[in-house]
Amino acid sequence: MANDNLLVGLPGFRDFYPEIWEEISFVIKRMKEVCKRYNYVEYEGPSLEPIELFEAKSGEGLMGEVFHVKDINGRHLVLRPEQTPTLARMLAKEQQRYQKPIRWFSIPRLFRDETPQKGRLREFWQLNADILGEESILADVEVIALAIDIVRACGLADNEFVVYVNNRKLLSTMLKELGLEKLSTSIIQTIDRKQKYMQEYVEKQLSSTSSNAKEYAMYFRRLLVASGQFLDKLLKESPQELMPYYERRDEIGRQVLEQELGKIGVGTDAIKTIISITSFQAKGDKFQDEIERVDIPDYLEPVINEFKQMAVYLDATGALDPVVFDFGLARGLDYYTGFVFEGFDKTGEVVRAIFGGGRYEDLVSAIGGEPLAGVGFGMGDAVILEILKSKGKLTADKSKMVDLYIAPLKSGQIPKSLSIANKLRGKYQVLCNPFKWKLKKHLEIADQYSARYTIIIGPRDVENKVISLRDMKSKETQTIPENELEDKLQELIK
Image (cartoon, rainbow, N blue to C red; front, side, top):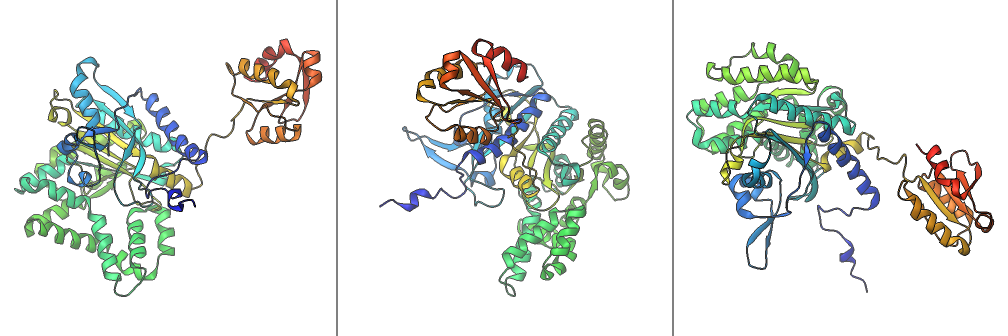
């Protein structure tokens, strides 16, 4: 008896049936197209790396999610959970060979041992695009614009997604001024988890009165992410139990941050300053006006000027519309040192980021190479696919699957059909089914594959050295001398 358990895939891993792979290919194709338009070149790295490479710079959170492997010699390896450390290792060895700035991209298969959720898988493809060897803010601008253009190319309009931008210098400067440098990593990770803490708070509060506490808390998280008309729709459909919490969202945000920052040893006055500064948020085109209305300490003025520059340059690239400057965006990875950014679906359908990235200064030098500043981002296939499906925007390239279908009518015509297929595959996409099928079945399959033309080869065609060519749209069939077939096809198929 067959073991049914063998038929069930591992949680968080997908079986890539053709129709599923076609969806993934749709996204990957657009990622590649846009990267190449920006003159980024493709590279790859190994799927296995020594654990020390990731321990050096990936942070505790990510290290808790890696798949561990041992090789035949007992060396501790991991299936790569992200690509940036691999990029840093490669350039630490060979950066002198490449003219700067270096613009590279890769779409590796990555692995993370985390709880599968909507938009979160244990195995996934992720675009990584980086520009290295350039310290100008214009490099940050280019990478953010690149990420935005990829989302647009996948089919989302500017009003359907938002890109939050912050600068780690703002957080690090503030924490230094407050005398909290030693706690900076813990504080930044706490700020980064603010919405997660808010979701957990709501779930805990509802758990004593509702069996749907977990589901409602996730809906609350969606409300926090959504905006505009999409938020209005969610609010209309929101469970009534959630509305008191949503109306108190700012208060809840302050409360959970006060509690979590207090746990790691931050004093009351410092907590107030951190919450005050990290609460600022403004749309990119409104930033210049909004920042003048709030009380920002003078020591942050140099960083504020960088935001103003960023707004001007992003506007010039046409990428400012979906951007929101958010002083509460932290990004938990330890290696970021400058601007950081994350893109989200405005509808709240998927609460995980579409993409995220930022500037790093010391990744390459940290593993033995010469200093090489960089800016980069990652964008997985899972989140953007979920969003495109939810909006009905997943339009895989099915318009032209086959140029020519070849149909022999009898076994005696099989050699001729194979010979013609072999000759034409040098120029066209050809499907040949050299089987003894009735013509009706051949034509049905030609239609399934959206063939433009079907070459029908019967006994008389072989005798008379002609080819019957059927136009699958008009259903008209013409007879062509065999020696004129290639010229005729060149005329018909541009």
